[in-house]
Length: 357
Image 1 (cartoon, one colour):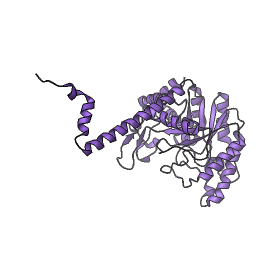
Image 2 (image 1 turned 180 degrees about the vertical axis):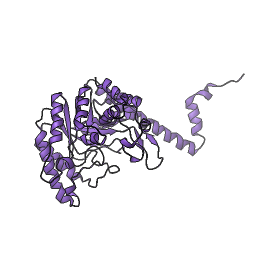
Image 3 (image 1 turned 45 degrees about the horizontal axis):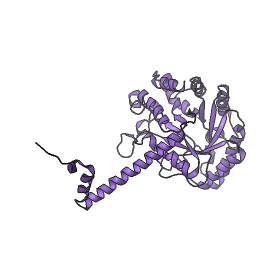
């Protein structure tokens, strides 16, 4: 009969024996011990955040970009009305400089006015993005007439445009607050060249002076290393979360980010400890990511399903709740409507309809 002593199955004795084998074993043990401790700290801080936020009402919303709806062959107003009719009560609207001031000193607010009108009719709330960099490719949206100008010249034009937008909507009943720029320091994505912190501070100060009683939000990217410590310090921070993307640089395959929900809870808790400000999710991926940068309208439904289908969307809603953050804006609501109206696939729309009802 095989006999095994208690020492042989004692994990501490096994670790001790491994440690005594040599310096490489010691290095491995130290390395993995540090990893385990770090992960444990991240998990604990994440759970502390989730617990601290548990009694705050949970709010879901979506980002709405009329230009994107048009690019999908949709009528923007009908798309927005459809989203309002499935009980979505929180929206993030954009105010592209290229759309509003396509001609210098000539402002066209017709589209954005209509969006606010619909929001008010349905008692919805709006977080309005202002600035040069706003949601959706190419990220920065300058009017054609500033191209070729020195930064010192177009900056003042930008500030004048922001002033016009803020003054027009700061007293609108639907407005809940302003977002200044979008993922401002994300240099690896988008067609943007200017990342001056002084410009961001100046824009923040403009909005804060014109609308001192409205919340101001500034966003960061989900995979950016570090925490926003320098000025400006907004009332609340926003974070983007993308789970499944196309890797165009190395593998040329879909990449699933491995971060669990409590990793983002950890980011929110550390942010709160450092700055005293909370964090919300301003973009949670809820649409397909086509391979190779091709347009959604040129991508087959079969390929779209590789990055977004009904099961994945359902999981995104669950993931958002699991982070503990109490305000979430989903990314891709226009796409849900496109799948139903153009591709005759209501699977995503039905999931969203169920969640928002």
